Image 1 (cartoon, rainbow, N blue to C red):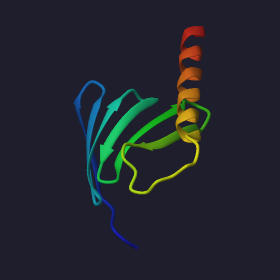
Image 2: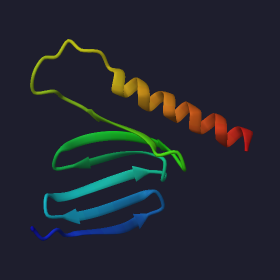
Image 3: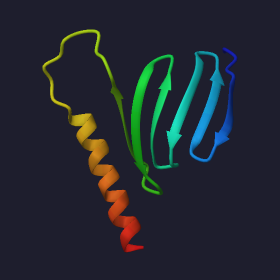
Length: 90
């Protein structure tokens, strides 16, 4: 069993800095939608609270050429849209 370490600091409203075994990362955004930059690249993510539904997509340069679709990014945009609609209806 390995030992894990993770410590997160709130730098400013909406900005969080995290230190862990795998390196440091910075996250900007709300609890439900945000973008993060860390040792494994840049990611954008979104979730719907209380449902367990979430999506995360790596963005930026790709090391290999890929002709696949951007379904993950579409899922993130769809979840973000649902969050906005639910917030407007509440």
